[in-house]
Amino acid sequence: MVTSVKERLKKILINSKLITSKQLDEALEFQRKKGGRLGDILVNLGHINRNDLVVALSQELNIPPVDLSKLQIKPEIIKLIPKQVVQHYRLVPVSKIGKT
Image (cartoon, rainbow, N blue to C red; front, side):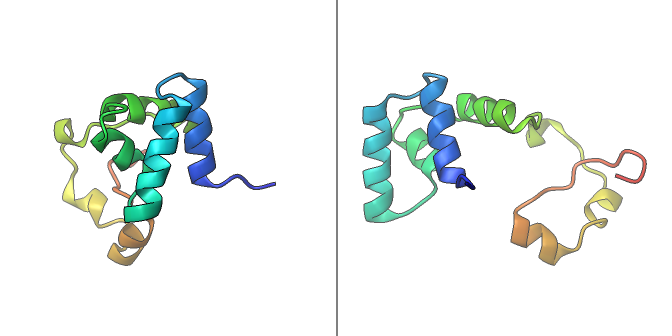
């Protein structure tokens, strides 16, 4: 069975004890009424700080967090991925290692 990103996020945050079930329920109700991304809602409600959210997600997904404010991305790196792909997947190319 494929688990949605939303379900994975809920499991990650509850299992790591970063939020309570009550906080999650409040955020889900807010999301149902007004829309928005669950992570952003949890941060805006003050249930979790953005850094803890990023660290939890990066550990679960096995992707190291990157602080873009401390990174200088070379223009030639940005040009490697077409703008349409960048926008569709909401990604930011940050470096190139070999052919990757």
